[in-house]
Length: 290
Image (cartoon, rainbow, N blue to C red; front, side, top):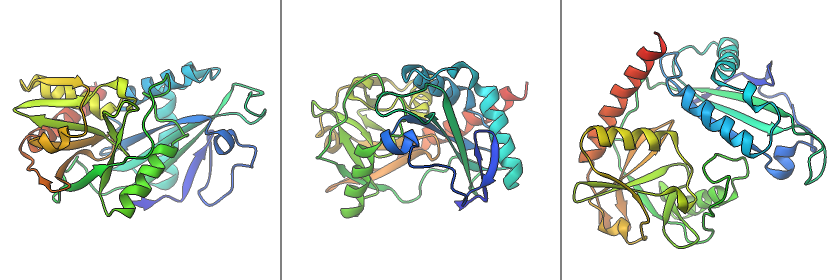
């Protein structure tokens, strides 16, 4: 992915290298905000409506005033402005961040919001299943905690940052966070799925995992193909017992896991669902043109 020249700061196009925040910024001080990461495919945003609904729901929980105005239409307008400025019209990774206006200490002076949109060009026009499987292990230090913010992608992301440090230190591709009760929750940047005896399992939202857009889509795609799905509580040893494991997020789609410690896996179901995902994206793109 290549970095873009410009960002969109609250509707104003500025150079990506230009400072736009001061130390009083509440995202910097308190992690007071949310973000969505979207994928643009052939110039379209096929999952925009789902991302917009989740962002608005999170903004409502954070008590942001006027959250209703940041709907899919407004997000698309601001993304389109940035795409034109950067001359990116095909495939890209987009981050749409929203944070509370400056003012106050822990108690905000205002509840209005500001947004920043960033974009990176990518080459792939489809969700490609990784050729080399991922290596994973369990991150043991800081558990996920269930609360009203758990389903959303908040700017306050220290457990994920430290999980990322752990995977880097241990030469892993991903690390798995646990719930406070010790069940599988999610990975540093993805939801996780396990296959055992032709049943698809994924941690339930009570484990504190993000309510991922791609997680929902894959659950629906599996059901459409007659693959039973269970959202449930999974002990860490489920990783060793699984026949197959894969991860999901909105940028990479489905990524299959080859190994957890000494255990090795194949990608039969992952491959089928990855093909189904690309068919779904084509349908979503066609529906958006109607």
